[in-house]
Each structure stands twice: as C-alpha cells, then as structure tokens.
Amino acid sequence: MGFPPRELRDLQLRVRAEQQRPEWKTRYAVRSGIEGTVNEFAHGHGMRRCRYRGQPKAHLQHVLTAIAVNIERLSRQPAADCLPPRPPTAFQTYLDQHQVPRPRSWRTLGT
Image (tube, rainbow, N blue to C red):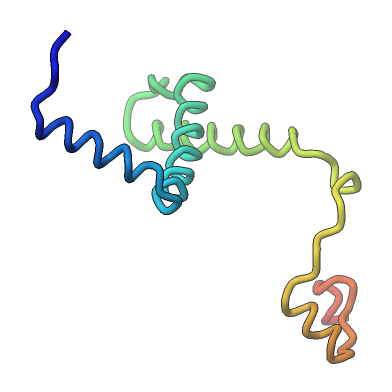
C-alpha cells in the first residue's frame, strides 16, 4: 500500500469537494446524458466500426443510424392521449388574463 504525493492528495480532496456543489452536479448532468447517448451508439448500434470507406459514406451511415435511434426512442414514448395536458405557457396565461381569444391551434390562424 502506497500513499500518493501530498500535491496529488490535496488535488483529489479539492476536486471531490467541488463535486459536491450543485453547480458541478448540474454541469455533469448534461455530460452524463451525452455520455449515455454516445454509449448507446457505440455499443448498441455498432458505431465503433464503419461499414463503408470514405468520409461521405461514413457520414451517411452515422446520419441514418441517428435517425433510426430517434425513431426507436420515439416509438418508446407513451401515446399522446395518455399524457396529462401541458400547463399553459406564460404567453397563453397572459392572453387568458386579458381575455384575448386564442384559437385551439396556431395552425388555424390563417383560415
């Protein structure tokens, strides 16, 4: 059993203390999500090796795999009629407070 040099030990203690702060945890949560996506591509869809030669073909493989992953993720989402209604946005609340009528869908504005 050995002991690390004092400078390394002090650095480890400082970094471990910083990792307990909420700001660090918020920043790391973003990285954690990205790491999960990269891991899913690398291990779940074989993106460690490319099937084709040449950058344009490799790029096409990556884009098509990303589309397939997104479709797969969307298919796992619950149906829209099972979800609770979304709370109104601040703009919608403003319109309601000032009794401004708003259409059910913004797509019907021009009709």
